Length: 288
Image (cartoon, rainbow, N blue to C red):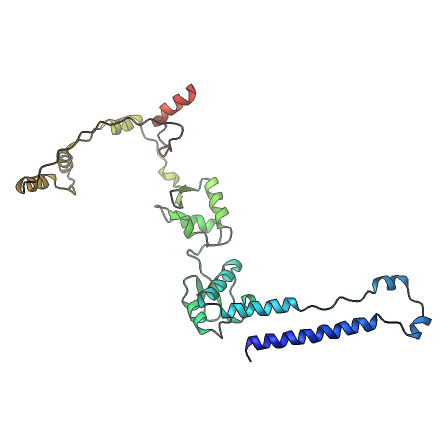
């Protein structure tokens, strides 16, 4: 017998039960017997002994309809339902327990069972299914240890499914300056804050770096690199010789006048460790 036929039979039984309960309630509300008249009844009993409300089976009907809809849903929808259960509870469930919790019957649907065994977000130990996060960390200390293993940074999106309050722990580690949590145009990146890398750069060295002029002709750049034992990636001399051989005009390097970039209050500051770069901003702020 299909589930739909069982549901129809259940509805018929519901109507019969409703009629029976109504008849019982009406019979109790009729005139009392002679024996009841000869015996006094307490007032409290009269006021509180009201006819009970008829039993309703609407909740069971809705549950059966939900079960029917879940089991008729596509395989992907049923898998998503199971993954959501595993993610929210972070517990291991047998297929029977999964059927009780979210009505996905993996024993009756082999496609769902096989897909769950191969799903990258699920771990199956031969008996139970559990959620499999991208990184196996369970608390803030393990999270910090994991981030310290990625000096080039790790995406916060890869950590969000580690455990329920991982986002709060990321913000706490950022507030305690144990990590750097920086945002680009797309996502947040968590970097380890290695205190051993905090060094003081001498002002003379900064000045030497800024005063060094780079030749405008790239051929001169290649010569400088070779002088210090570095092999250039490009070969400007060979490219110019080929241009002369095949009659292609040599493009002369254009000397563009550098425009001094003004720093305003709306400028996004990325070199905060070099405060002398922002003296003009501070001066303009003081004038305003």
